[in-house]
Each structure stands twice: as C-alpha cells, then as structure tokens.
Image (cartoon, protein in one colour):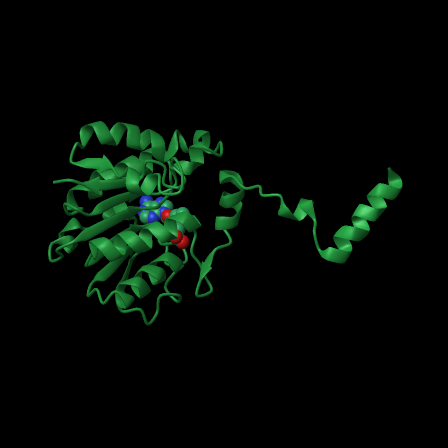
Length: 224
Ligand SMILES: C[S@@+](CC[C@H](N)C(=O)[O-])C[C@H]1O[C@@H](n2cnc3c(N)ncnc32)[C@H](O)[C@@H]1O
C-alpha cells in the first residue's frame, strides 16, 4: 500500500495529474469571501462576479441616463458604471449616495459621477426630474429597516422597463440575516405585495442557477 502511494505520488509529480487539484468546491460562503477582495481599476468594488455580468447586460439593455446607487463605499462600482456608460455611449449621470465621503479621491475625473454624502434619507428626489430612464441600486446597510426604507423611497422614480436592484439578499443564505433583523429578503417580502408595479425578473435571478446571485429575488423590473 505504501509503495502504491509512493508510486502514485511520483506519477502525479511527473505528469502533473493531481485528482486533488481537480476537485471543484465553491458555494455562496466562499464566493462571499472572494467578492470582498474584488477591485475595479484598483478600487474596492464589492459585488458578486455573476452580478457584474448581469449589471453589464442590464445597463446595456436599459441604457439608463441616471443610475442612482445607494451605498458608494470606495466608489469602485460607481467608476465601473461610469466606464460602462461611456463604452455604451450613454449620456447621463450616476448619483452615488453614502453617509461618508470615502470615495472622493477615487472618483475624481469621472464627470458622470456625483457623490451625495448625507445618506439616502436626505437625497432630494427632485434631482431625478430631468432624467428619462432611471435605474436604482440599493446597496447600503442591508438591515431590514434600511433596505425597506430606501426601496420604499426610491421605487417611484424607477422608470417603467427599468430596474430597482436590491443587493445582498444572500446574507440570509450565509447566516448573517439575524444581525440585520431579517435583511433584504424580509424587506422584499414586505415590499413586493405592496408594489405590484414591480416583478422579480427571474431571467437575471436564475441566470446561473436558481437565485445564483447575491441579489436573491433582488432584480425588480418595473412594469408600469
Ligand atoms: C456594501 S457597501 C457599498 C458597496 C459599493 N456599492 C460597491 O459596490 O463597492 C455599503 C455602503 O453603504 C453605506 N451606507 C450605510 N448606510 C447608508 C445610508 N443610510 N445611506 C447611504 N449609504 C449608506 C455604507 O457607508 C457603505 O459604504
């Protein structure tokens, strides 16, 4: 047996075949740990890789002239959206809202990006009036209260055919929702019956497998 194991080790070494290295293992928890390390142009840009692809497709289809991002953090995602809009020749703005100004340096030179640093609660919806096609991304504190408050406030400015994207319902799958008082999924369970003008777009949620996204049931298409 020992000799067999030694021979196998030598064989693997010699020919580079290692069944151990061919083992595939990932799940929402491992992707969660990975996604924290994601950077765009060197700026932290926390988002699930599957969702990056969906965002790219949605922005390319919807062509929003205003993207409202609730939760700027370091500004990596705002820069990503700005570059996408440029590549798609979309003339518009990104209103990225946070409770601090950590992204200030990182977004310098990106004229589409406007930072608001006083929380979504203090964003003036009047600022949306001049835009034709509005996409809203809720990616703030992920508590039940914060998520529900934000989506209730911004739902009315999403234009028909566009999306309200509610980030990070995945926290329920990785046992974090208790600390968030139920998190985004609890908010969605309350929000959706009150807002029949929105439907969960399964085309995105299930693109890579049932809710294989961090935005579990979080791609809400506005119907009218
Ligand atoms: C998950 S991070 C955002 C990640 C960012 N969108 C990205 O992709 O890199 C959440 C952010 O929400 C911000 N936040 C918390 N409460 C907020 C509020 N009431 N209004 C706006 N932003 C808030 C936090 O300061 C934090 O920077």
